[in-house]
Image 1 (spheres, rainbow, N blue to C red):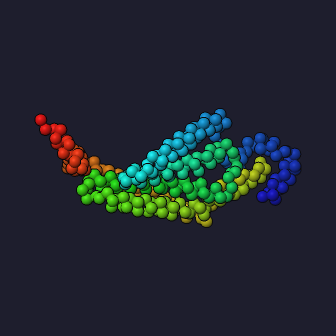
Image 2 (image 1 turned 180 degrees about the vertical axis):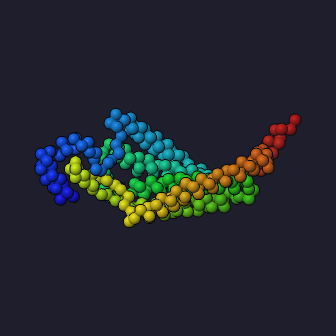
Image 3 (image 1 turned 90 degrees about the vertical axis):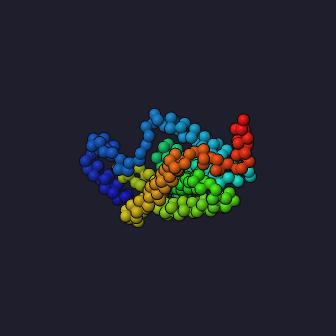
Length: 266
């Protein structure tokens, strides 16, 4: 790169042009393009990012504190909601500040470790959210269509195993990001500027396309299709084959049904 810049300087001297005159006369854009927000929008986006960060941390933190009480953990749904809150909190603490800094600085300032960690956690958190919502759909499907076949103690253990599997799968899906994310210094010899960037560096484009396709299928298409099918079956069961109040009475304990029956008697 230094040789290229030196040759350019020799050419410019022979033409009696300075570097900036050459750039202005021919309207040459930078050789390395870095997307930037307009300066007028930076304060607005900064305020929005800070607001989102504060609300996300406080809201998801409060959810975790409230639901992690002993009695709350007796419900299978609590495990899934805590998983969603934890993944959102992960994005809020790690990813939102780094994304905000990228809008204000042209160079990557967080170092090589965070260059690997932040995209890895982003993919992990998004994968966890989608897979956890799929687990919630499964839990509702079993609880609504087969309420008498589900024992609470069994399903608590089953829900915990499902969540452990979800996080292991999410970590496995995000694992390639840890190896392909690298900090690289790009040199724009025309403008004589060095840019430090955090980039995905794949051995070849074929591997990149394969990973992107797998990510799309495993994190978006498959969970969305599964949730659509399960919720469609729930709606068909509730509004088609059975009445809603019949399902509700099946899920109520005997003592509650007796109270309702006594209160309905003249």
